[in-house]
Image (cartoon, rainbow, N blue to C red; front, top):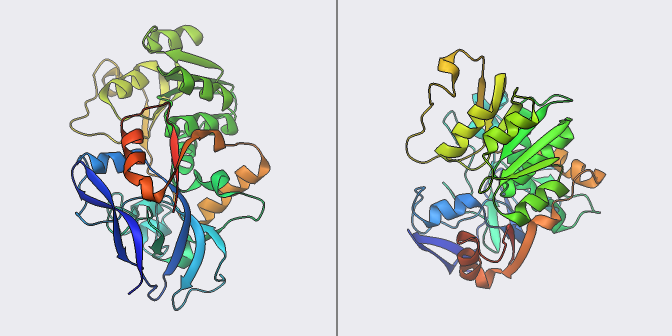
Length: 351
């Protein structure tokens, strides 16, 4: 039996390099040899035991690679073809998918998130891709692995927050937290036509990156109350759209307080514990606010559209990759990323 290396969740506080059998493709599936992947904040939630997955599961949900095997019924692809696969792998046939809610595939929340959640993920040498016809997205020949590495998750999620926030040309947009997803939301807001983008964080390097990706104003919340600053910048009116990209009560409330009446709060954060709506910030429910949440849009056509944006040169997310590790050093990579040391934004993992 051919074996491969894989990053395995052993229990809270422990993700370790292990060995597993190389998977094989069943009907409608494909096997992708992973050439590059990365670590996501959600993987850290799994590591810390804050999101439950089964011990023994291979983690990771952001694969770039080449097709190594095609199952029965998977047509139009060739062995050795370079592909990306979204973190969300919709079937394309169920009611939510046909209604345009692929992330909720199967009819329950986060149903489309399978890699590293309900099936083995891609921090491994090989990954089995379900519903391959709906999820294998060929990589244009002119793009490198690093250029498309952000497409499967953080680019799709961050851009999704801007899209679902219905940003209009000329809008003022406030993005709270400039981690990788918040930075992608900032870039997405610029692409959507926002005339004024306000980025909030406390890490100087992230605020500087926000400027590179389209922020017109940056606010360090250690020194300035972000709500007061946003109201001042907008003449007391507030932002048209506020994007929450951290998943805390404080940032959620700040987004509400920074909104104009009739504005939209676009929530990308993953919350734990109880989330409450303060009556005053919510205008007692009478402020005509809109509140929308987004789970990373997936599927091959979403990946194609994101890669088209990368090909156009309108956005370059390669600077987000601040560190690179071989799969053999995955435990070291997790220690760095989970503790946010050494200015890390995203880590490229190369099997």
